[in-house]
Length: 160
Length: 421
View 1: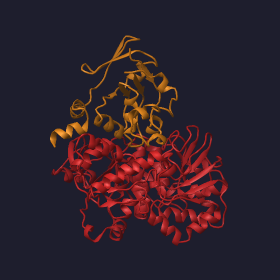
View 2 (view 1 turned 90 degrees about the horizontal axis):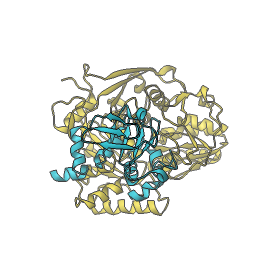
View 3 (view 1 turned 90 degrees about the vertical axis):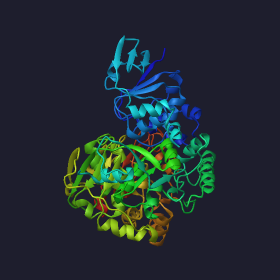
View 4 (view 1 turned 120 degrees about the vertical axis):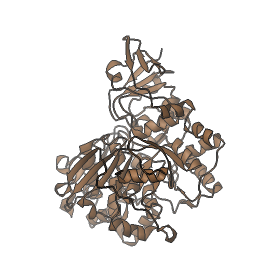
């Protein structure tokens, strides 16, 4: 069962998610080895397939580096749940076809290590450890269209 | 319908009579900025999709800057990928090593930024160009790839916050102090998804270089773009920098009854030198509250504050003095490098014990040319002081003006620059 990695922090920035010293590659698996390194050096050891990251306001602020999304996706993280996302990170996630969840309540209702199931169709985060369901606002239609096409480039290829 | 300058530019770019905040548009892009970190992945994406084309080789500006000259084998490979692509697609404005500079200083200097246009770049500080009355914003590699191929990009029209800057800056206070103060008040995400429109009497006395320092840092408040309307200072700069065949441009101004999400007013006449304490750019406090904190390094450079005006201020303060800590000076472009050399600034820097680098983003983002060890402090004229930004996660970055950085270099601790002016 996927677990939550909870960071009770606002403004978790792209320098923490993937430090610039690793930006000499765009290989997702290489980037994944350093995912969240300057925030939590143990993260890559703890994370398992389909786990989720839970955080506060303004997740992904800072640089435009899409490497931040690639590092998280490369680490097999299913989604990031944050109170809000920084603008460029939000765009990058959608453009990569990576579903992210904005939720004001999740940080208070999920503890580190809780077992989590995400139901995108019903827009529910199910905390299996506490039995609490947390509803979230689904991404807007235009973003879903891009995600359903598998990212922006597939989306525009249809138009070309 | 009354519109702000940002709304008017986006309406024109989308081929619409008007737009309003929240509206989704497809905008035609006038200029695309490409550098060595985010463009090679964009190129690879396009090649993988079999759409290896560029919408207009004259509208794509390429300059390696982050890790140039190549700092290691991997960055050399990034430069090679960028170079092969730029040559293959006959990119007209491709600035190779020797001509290359820190992108956000290079593009205006070389006349690629015009008012009323829409500019995107694969770099978050692309918002810098808004100083010229343009809409300009940073994007990631996928957006960049889409723009390179199609010349279009989707946007959600942002609501605008009007920032009124009143009063003349006191001696020893600069535009860097203004923007650090603004960010300290509105917060690191105070302008998230929004436009920041700057106006007010303070701007009239600021050069284009100083104004670019302000718009450069709007991303540190979360903004989509920062923008300043044209005046005679802008027009003079454009006259000097735009090529003969590019001197035409469209001037947009906000309507008097345009709708703003909020209006924030600042009395800049009383402003003191500001230092943003670690680890957020919103950590700004007056120098009096942090004076004396010991530093191991001073870094003067970056797209925020590495232009000729900045280096002149630094040289004035360092003239005849010795620096007490490692001090790294990074002129942002080859032109600024040459100007600094010709004006004798390098002699001052050399005599004071500084080291002078080639133009590069360098240590600003923890690339190279001045990386910090664990526990070290650096006073820096750059734009971010996040954890690990300039090196070890246990190092600390204090953001300040070039004057504050220079004065602090002399004393080896955070120092009020006004005593050296």
